[in-house]
Image (cartoon, rainbow, N blue to C red; front, side, top):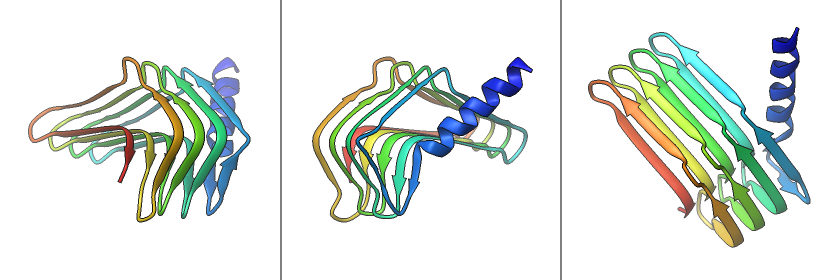
Length: 156
């Protein structure tokens, strides 16, 4: 029962922290110890906390995701962790993103690990009055032909 309650809470937090074709505004998102994992060949683990997509906007908000863990294990595995990201012409304005001890791992032959913290993506992207704190953030890919990419505090 305890596992179910924790899973339901993580699911609810995940659903409330992702905006589709909209914005996260005047909001505080706090997550401590969120865990996401996918195991097996061709597995994909996607963890998104405080993410706005499709001309996403995050403004006047705080995203605090401490000890977030995302793991994909197996041949051709993919692990993607996004914390405080606005994409498709994204904008972050007056935002604090904390991702202390965020860990993202992909393990297995031909695996890929991608971690993005405090990022605006797309043409017209903007980071304005943004603080990104990512102490002890780790991104790791292990195995033959693996790749790892970590981006923190980026507008691209």
